[in-house]
Image 1 (tube, rainbow, N blue to C red):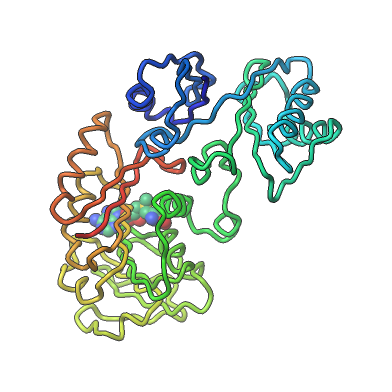
Image 2: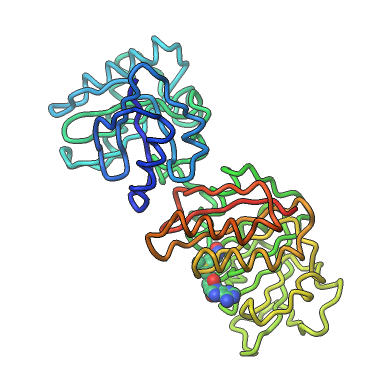
Length: 372
Ligand SMILES: C[S@@+](CC[C@H](N)C(=O)[O-])C[C@H]1O[C@@H](n2cnc3c(N)ncnc32)[C@H](O)[C@@H]1O
């Protein structure tokens, strides 16, 4: 059987190694790009769940067929309409990824043409709630087709194929690209933020993760010496800032200014409490006073192992069973070593550790763990 496998070219070596360890003797039959391959597993079915649960691979989808499209898409449209009928899907939609430029147009307009063509062959297209999503990779005059979405339980939340399926609120109101990372992490690790959740966000500026957490019902203590975009936070949020050494604030309108030494229970009533200070200048006992937290998120631009040490040190401020979301930045090619060292730093205070390269992660991975 043949599968299309998606990963990130920044982790090519690790991805291929991981794929080989999951699929055994399988052969890579084609590179569709430096981040998409076709793998042939012979008679064996690939373990799609193991691939979804892996560190570096996003997902794998069974290759349905490939077809020549160098002189047009009619043959592809007819075949797709046939599959919809044969598999008894009520409706479908297509998502096109264009790897090489045999067609001047962008993927979106090719997709519209294919959808319209499929309808001529009797298929029902439903862009909002399709029974199946066909993934079409166009590469060098050939279209490679797989099915994703509802029929493929693993990978539905890992939207590598099309970053364009992005959350409208984040696109329109988001503070930073980083918001997509936390959204992906919440989906992949299946974390639900409840009302009344207390969150600690370290390395929070300009505030994307904090906004996401607040939007979903958490109250947030955000630590960063940098500026947070207070005006982009959910409407009617009560916001306070504790000024650090620099003692300056950019837009203080409607923002309470508090003193670190005088923080008490009332500080917990803020939707966002920004401690405008470097992490190392804050006493852990102060964080413990502001807790206990249900979730801690750390997205600091320092090497993975150092972030892990911060997570270990701050674990004192977390509830038992609290979630940790930690970005592991890879500063060189010793990827496996950085992961191992980070896990080692966390081992005494956290359990259930999982690491995943999420689609919006760059040269970094996301670690999930639960406070012991
Ligand atoms: C990638 S950004 C975080 C983006 C953020 N998660 C968001 O969604 O907008 C990394 C942040 O880490 C902060 N940072 C770096 N070193 C830090 C330290 N020692 N203590 C606290 N924050 C730090 C930087 O100021 C920067 O704002």
